[in-house]
Every structure is written in structure tokens, then in C-alpha cells.
Length: 343
Image (cartoon, rainbow, N blue to C red; front, side, top):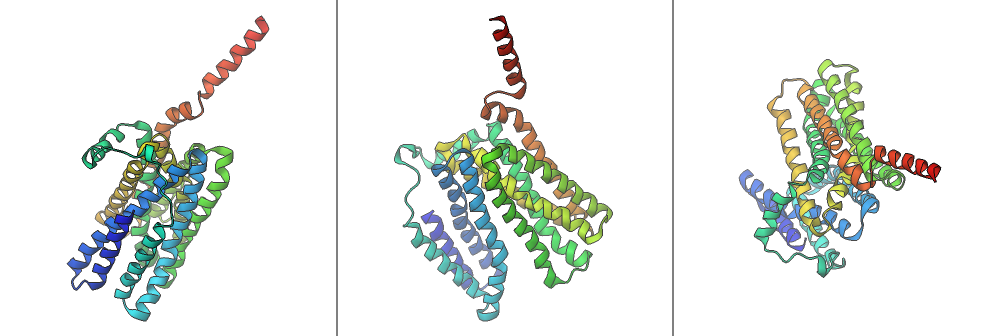
């Protein structure tokens, strides 16, 4: 994480000093390479410290805090641009990176020495191939990955759908977009309250069901124009909100079976999520036709894909985490009753 923060600071300073668009892009890549370390490792640190439902609760809290950034970031960034120009944004990020680097030394190492890997970097990279052979891991990754693809389609498509197609004043777009962020935060908070009662796997299944239903409703509204603006805003709000029930719980499930490789699993999940986001937003642009339909069908496919990933996982998941399936559990109870009668 320290190395990542150093790269982030260097990349941010490079952006602030860039004189061309190509230089800006290059330094942004360096900045992103550094920033991803903190995103991936913060989730791995949660897995080091917590297990099971408690880990899902803490991840929901972490994601709630992270959801605040896109809500206040544009507001703060806009004020910085007005007061000091766009380069000041990146100098501000340099300062944030330095402060975070200093704060890192106040946090004890969460991975105990006996659980640290001794393999080379090359073997560690090769280990990702082994992780991809685990169906449970792929199921959890798919549930969150498809959702991210839909969310990036939502981010890429709603400016056109709201402002251009439905003629929402540009200054009010942020309010409609902010509704989704508020929904994500509220759902994460609710997720932490529900986990002790239902467990993260059941909430994840329910979350993907709502994801698929809201995504398909949004797809129909984008195709037919049913309900006008609000016919699209409402299902998209529900779709975005389900992030609070899917992302943290899917990450928890993926990390549960690999405590000794939490960092690798977290990085793999992050790569799948953001890779899906690239595909989702790219498809919206590639199939643009002057209507919200490209955004709608991408979100619809993403929602159904998230649910199918969970449904394909569920028999294995409940068979392992609950001990036995409902059918076998009923059979065992019946057998015990017969045994008592015979005795």
C-alpha cells in the first residue's frame, strides 16, 4: 500500500505539471496504478481482521465511506477549479496522498507473519490462474462483476438519457445522479443491519434478484419510453441501490475460502469489476443510437448476468455454508422420527 501511495503521489504531481493531453493520460495511468493498491488491500485488510458475516458488515461500512467520494468529489473539485484552476485539483490529490501515506504508519500490519506468502512474484501472478478454476469464486465474482458493468453503463448513459433525451437541465443532473449514491449508501447501511439475521449469502441472492428485476424494468422503459423520465429514473435508482446488497457480500464470499490469498483474491475481484465496467460503458458508446436503449439493454443484460451467477453458485454455496441442503435436512428429520418410533 505504501508503494501504491507513492505512485499515486507521483502520478498526481505529473498530472499537475502536464503540458499536453498525452502527458496527462500517461500520468493518470501512473496515478491509477498507485490508487488501486489501496482499494484492493483495504478489502484484504478487512478479511485479515474479520470473517464471515462480520467481514460482510465491515465491508459494507467501508463501501459506504467510499460511496461518499463520488458524491462530494465533483462538488469539491468544482470549487477548486473556480478558486485556483484545474491544476490545483491534482496538487490537492498530492497532499491527500502524502497525508494518507503518513497515516499508514499508524495502522498495524493486519497480516500475521505465519500467513505471509514466501513465493516469488512470478509464482504469485501464476496463482491467479488457479483461482479462476474455483467455481464458487467465479460465481461471487460474476455477481459483482456484472453489476459493475451495469453501473458503468449507468454512469456513461444517464447524462445523455437525462439531459439530451429527456431535456433535464444540466444543473439538475447531479441531483438525479446523487440519488443513486444516496441509495447505495442507504443500502449498505441496511445491509450491515440485516447480515446478523439472514447471513451475507442470502442477502446477496435477494440483492441479485432485485438487481435483475430493476435492470429489466429499466431496459423496457428505455426501449418503450414507458413512464417518461421517471419511468427510467426509478428503476435505475433501485438498480444502483442494490449495489449495497451485492458488492460487499460478493467480495466477502469470494474472500471466505481464501484467507491466505486475500490480497490476490481482492485484486482479482477488483480487476473483474473494473474490467466489466470498461465493457459496460464501452458498449453504451459503441451502440449509441440517439435513444436510452443502448444503456437500457446493457444494464438489463448485466442485471440478469448478476442473478444467473448467483443462481449457478447457490446449490454449492448453501450446501457448504449451511452444512446440508433443505431436502437432505428434511429427510434426516424424518429418519430420526421413524427411529424414535421404532425404539
